[in-house]
Length: 124
Image (tube, rainbow, N blue to C red):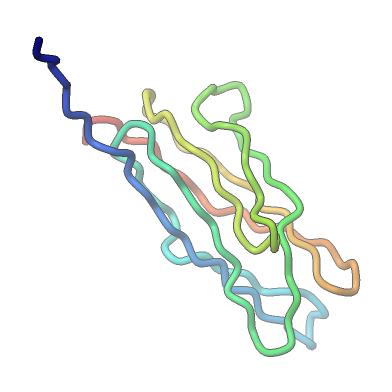
């Protein structure tokens, strides 16, 4: 008896660095993601945002949201145990641009957000 197995490619992974720098002149964090925007071309892509800590920083993710929110493309996000990564999957079945809001807190309880973009380009 033989069994037939269909070989399926594994999911694609997209890692994004989140750099946050305190600006004493404006009393706020300046946040940049690299790369930004990201273009997703494969179905079921796993997207991972990771905070890159500066000296003495203790920044953590507390959540995320996206617009448009009625599109059912993203899974529920998962935050790592140390709260420096937030990960979710993107079905990427529709061409759409998402504005993602990443919510971050520092050790003093200050909250801020950053809004990178995810461009869904299925089949590109």
